[in-house]
Image (tube, rainbow, N blue to C red; front, side, top):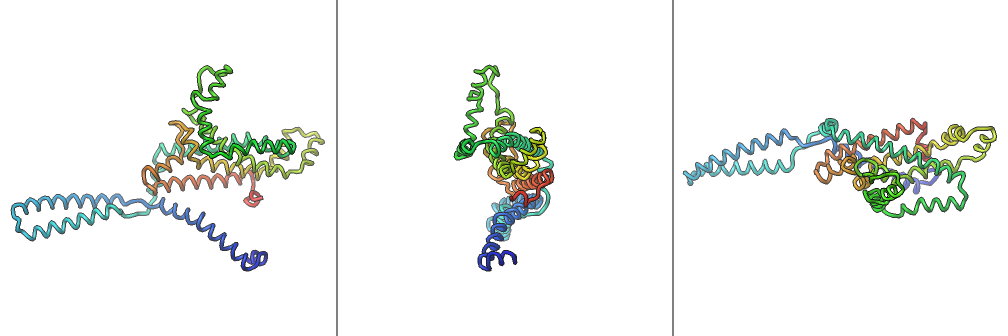
Length: 341
């Protein structure tokens, strides 16, 4: 804090600190606290059941009194008793509309015990890792080519070719892949005309279409971090290794990949988190056997109206993403300050 005041002055320093604190509080800390709070409470079903049982007994008693009142219409005591029962039933109905909240791990227990949702959760993890690996395999040679091989003019043309498709909305790009991968789409038609396949491939009956769509949707988030890192690599190190007789495999293994670790770590984290948290791509390109965990979260919030269970599922996905970040930092032996560079 003292360094900030010395560097920027009291006024600007206070503004920077206040803005940072507000940003952290409003956009990071408060939403996560709210989600944890929602995930930890549920309705007291037992108390609700007891209320309904009491309401049923009161209703039976009211019916008996009404039968007596038909025979004795001037009996004021029965009238008062029926009125009291009506008030009590109205009170129970009001409480039933706003049931009591209890804090417990019930929502988490439901996630753990639900075999289908647990299976979808782990399938989402595996599919996200697979998309990340495919994106890394595709992007690494392209990033190296852009950083150290392509001419200035060729680099500009390649960047334009990579960026222009992303000027279109993600939904439109996804629908474009839907048309390409459909049963009678461009890809199947081309493969049949070439003679590679006899029957159209049903991409939407498994994860194939969704995986292809997600690799395409988030490939730039892998490409640019690796490119930005490799661009700062001194070419003289590569030339020196070549002069000493090192093969290209050895150069990449001993020089280029170790140097690119921060960019690879950032790219894998970005792609994994975006893939694990996507909703549009699996909804459009995924078939009946390609349900994504985010689709279940959406269903809890908007279809089922159970925000507590939805918050629990969302928090589970958040913990997964944070764990993945920590694992990637350990695997690549990269610190957070290295990633920020």
